[in-house]
Image (cartoon, rainbow, N blue to C red):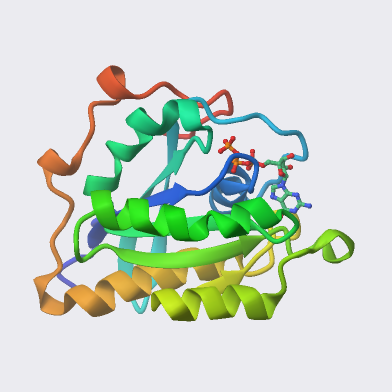
Length: 206
Ligand code: GTP
């Protein structure tokens, strides 16, 4: 009989989503957790999070995914969350050159504020919008390669590759930590009541 039978999860991970405002962070999270898409733009206020438990090679992993506001005015609040993240998703919009040009800046901010062993993945979102695309897949791949991190193009609208983003990052965290895997510590948490405000969109957990 499995030692973990009846347990809600075996491992727990904290992930963080960053990137410019409007690139589709909240929509990617909504697609992954609730399989829904919201075509209207409701900008995140401060920070929000959702939880989803995934099954990875018979290991139940509880993902606590923090969705940060891309707007500059929330930067002080959002950078406080980098330290607790085991994995970070940097998102840009394939139809928005500026958001792609800023990926390196986001990467530097991650290096400055996150733990040294935090894993990073770069995501080019909105790849359903082929007619409006300004950043090619090759450009995304090259940038990710130069930073030494994996890259995926996805669409929160169609759902293409969305699960892959979260599974890939979880896999990386498991791989890199090996037997040293540590559950998130209490000191990695941020008191939501003190630091963050909720998104205007609904959160399915607290
Ligand atoms: P902030 O909360 O301000 O940081 O923005 P965000 O990155 O969370 O963006 P959000 O998820 O709110 O999406 C911004 C807009 O892009 C919304 O109108 C979404 O409907 C749209 N959008 C998000 N993902 C996609 C996608 O994959 N394809 C298309 N076509 N539109 C998308």
